[in-house]
Length: 139
Image (tube, helix red, strand yellow):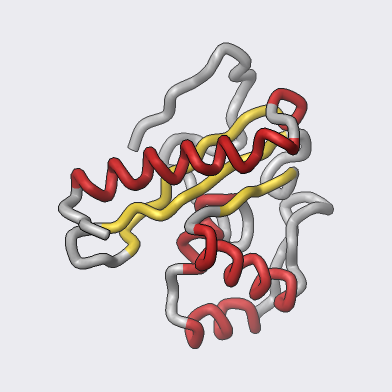
């Protein structure tokens, strides 16, 4: 694992190697979406806590996000880990095709306009694809 800080890095909510619940943040939701449906249903059936008022805790909303992640190959998190922060996540696959990690990029929301989100997510997916290739994954 590695963290690269940009010009505007002010502080981090998580320490390198820290953890978040699977429903909070772009990378954790990518990992959640990679689980079998039965495991997801079991996870969503328990009490879900919010990190911020923007953290999605409605199971129907989370299932919709999971379907979107599976369809697009990535996730965008807006203000659900920390208010004022956006994050983008994409899965990293190993040589067997299993999701073994998620790559994430985050930044101050004001520095990432909404219209740039698809471009940023595409770049994160491309970086995750390179990491997957390094692990022997072929699409």
